[in-house]
Amino acid sequence: PKKCQAMGTVIGKISKTAAEHLQLPVHIDVVQGGPDAFVGMVGLGCIAPGLLGLITGSSHLHVAVTSEAKTAKSMWGAYVGAPLPGLCFVEGGQSSTGSVMRWCKSLISGREEEGMEYKTFDDMAATVSIGCDGLVALETFQGSRTPATDPTARGALVGLTLSHRKQHVWRAFLESVCYGTRACIDGLSSAGIEFREIKMAGGVTRSDLWLQMHADVTGLPVVVGECSDGPLLGCAILSAVATGYHDGRVEKAVAEMVRNKKVIHPNMAKHLEYDKVYKTTYKPLAPAIRTMKEARSLEAVKPPRAVQHFKICPSLLACDWADIAGALKACEEGGEEWIHLDMFDGVQLNDPDALTFGPQMVKAIRRKTNLKLDVHLIVDRPSRYVEALAKAGADRVILQLESFGSEGGGRNQLQEIVELCREIKGAGMRCGICIAPSTPCSQVLELLMMGSVDVVNLLAVEPGFGGQKFQVAVMEKVRELRAFIDEHDISNMVGRELGFL
Image (cartoon, rainbow, N blue to C red; front, top):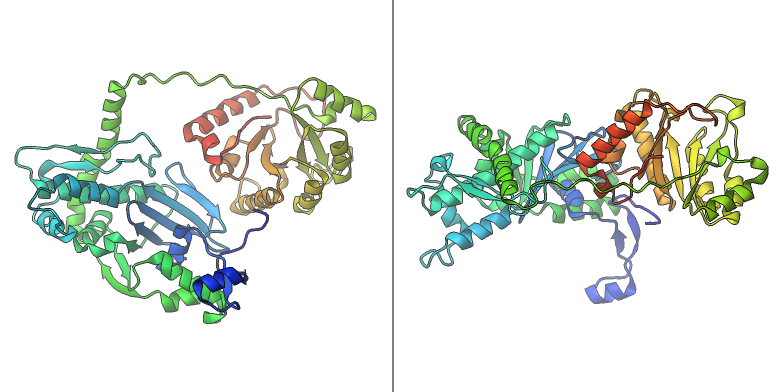
């Protein structure tokens, strides 16, 4: 997008056509909304750390905010600046929850249960003890999102005996969804995110048994609001704030518009019973099912990773600067796609010999070649150059991690880089990150998980000068980062080709 607007921002007036269709006056303001989960968090009042928003329906979405960007293998995010400025959005999810219960109802309904309400099935299940007399279900019918991202995961119903009845099956799937929510919370907690209560919206709020089961399994109070449609209330809150109500503050609007209807407190004695089933039966079930599925599959042996196709990105720093046009022509004739431009101001590297050129040179190079321009930027206050580089025709900007503040990978450093990456992409260019030979790969992992960068440049020489000896130890960093990318499917996550320079 050319421009991003924060949720709750007035972006214009309603069009004449829309006003006529909706029978509204033409002076009505149009307010920026957002994804249903983001808006739903506002409607649930989950705009402060410690609160888990649980939006339920055919699936479960577990959403929360943190004051700092936190991430882990078992979660999605953090997304900085969402759902509101100054916050970081994290999420987990279950792909099939309400949809599993709908499937189960259809499966076990005989002639006598035809047209039976969900509550009637709940009442039957309430007569069954925790653990369903040894029957356990796995709700991952459509794959698993959190804490293990596995689109091939499948559901299960294990432990059936002739003594089990329909109520056992129904309760087993109710419990499985709650155990899955507990697993999602555990996944989020692995990043150091803790919760004091759950704020729930959606279909589960209509089932007293299921509400209590969520509280008992997780060990957390479950809060249900007067308005169970969190996204709908969120839209109302954002619209009210944007048009001047509640002093124009989302926090005040949430405090005044989000009202609790009831709080379901966990029964800690039952929590201990559920905890035992969760740890001894539910958690081991998914790996066991996966092993069985792989054993039966003809594709049990994973094929070798496809041969990597390498691209050479020649650096202009190594050419004869008296004949830059000739060097560009040689690269084009050699079939290259990219040319690497080192733009150093001599300040960040603290050496007058490390002064190269600026956006005017990039613009001149663009006039001479159709090669894609890969600009390695090591300058003071790099954000000053984003617009100029975009106008000059740069295709990608690679930032030098060590040139930012907060040595050691502090949160201020991460925030600064994430915001600059967003600015670069907003200007229509791709973005990468570069690290010196002595900097560990761990410094860039969060940027990769967040999707902020498309390319990682692992320098095998110190930045700023050509003609240095290749540092062989960097090859171990290449292997380490390649393994991390494969393990976390990063290339899929960011939707871009991810490479090493």
